[in-house]
Image 1 (cartoon, rainbow, N blue to C red):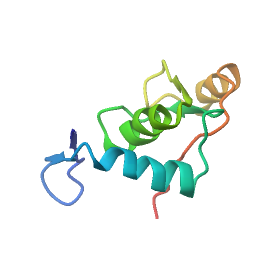
Image 2 (tube, rainbow, N blue to C red):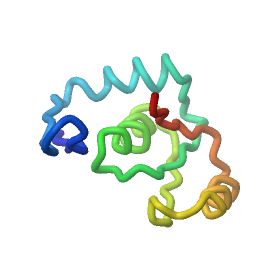
Image 3 (tube, rainbow, N blue to C red):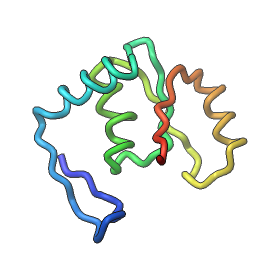
Image 4 (cartoon, one colour):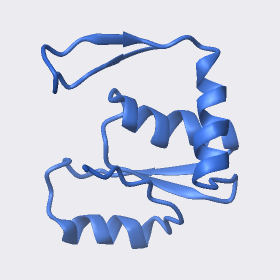
Length: 100
């Protein structure tokens, strides 16, 4: 799998991930760390070609049998539209990346 970095520390670049790493990552982070289960429905704001978006909103739900609500709104849309998507989609888990 090939994801692209944002270039925060330099030029954007492709980052290669081995297929064997995907289920390991899903188990250790999604299942064990945040407790995602097949009963969950996540909310995708991050684009799926970013590592964060593909992990939390594609690989992890897929591995665990969870569902995903993909936002039809552009990622820069105000919070009011996001709240509507969260409520309409009956989202149970929204893994949010925190900038420290």
